[in-house]
Length: 239
Figure: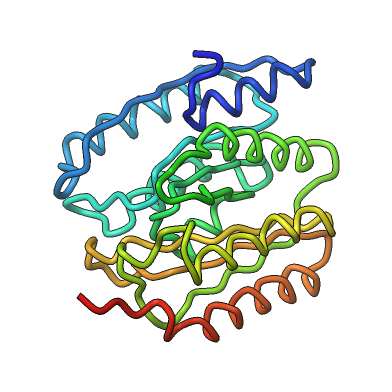
């Protein structure tokens, strides 16, 4: 799958290029966007993932290529429930890196259970492999330097899908600030625009930031949150 523009490929290619890592695949599957994931499908696939992690033996870290807006018949936050089960199995200290679609509905539970979260920065989505590579870089840091401090913010409004295009304002400037941040500091930060049609409690934009100190992570997250609040009126669409 080398060279294919999906997150797992970007992660594997980056790990292979870095050298010194043994990658143990567990499961990769996909589905077309639709209604609720059935309880049967969620439980079967979750069990396959957990069994695969259990059978893999001693691990240094886990990477999950997820979408982020899964709603099941039993869980509004499908990914959060999956992460809860994986964290319970892996223990409190094993690094778990996650990558998400830009439309992810990121919840406090997701940020709590995951050691790091990276998110697409383009809509239409063209940076899937790049996101996977960034997830590897952050996981590599966690393995060598230890856990990072994290900050999570949620905007108090929804953004329609028609206003989430990253080539137009205000998203263009918001996402450009992430690139500038990466070049200026060691902080990792990402924005999820959310998926309002999911019609769940956590379906608006959110921000995740990671840094060596809590103060730095909070400052970055608060700065991005303020930029969002300042741009609220620009997100309005007239149909």
